[in-house]
Length: 120
Image (cartoon, rainbow, N blue to C red; front, side, top):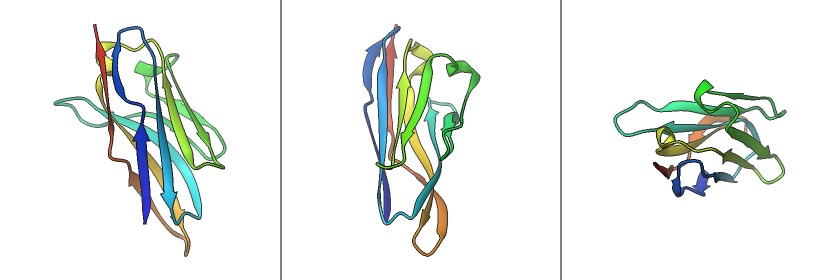
C-alpha cells in the first residue's frame, strides 16, 4: 500500500506565504513525476506545478514567479512554497505522484488534500 500525506495548509492573509509538504510512504520502488493540483469551490481540479525526478519543473501561468515546487528524493517528499498569495489561490491542494512499486507496478497516487484559504 502507498500513501501520500499532505500538510501545511491553513488560513493566511493576501500577500502572505505558506509551505505545503507531501510525504509518500509504503512499498515504493521509485517515485517518478510529482505534482501539486488544486481545486477551488465550483471549479475543476487544475495542475499547479510539476517536478520530474531529475528536478525539471513546470508551473501554471497564474503561479509563475510566486510558487516553487521542490522534492527530496531520499525522503520521498515534495513541497510547494507559495509566496505572495492571492485570494484566487484559495483551494484544496492535492499531492499527486507517479509511483513504481516493487514488481514494477506503476500508477498515479493522490493525497487526501489540504485546504488553503487566502483572505483579502
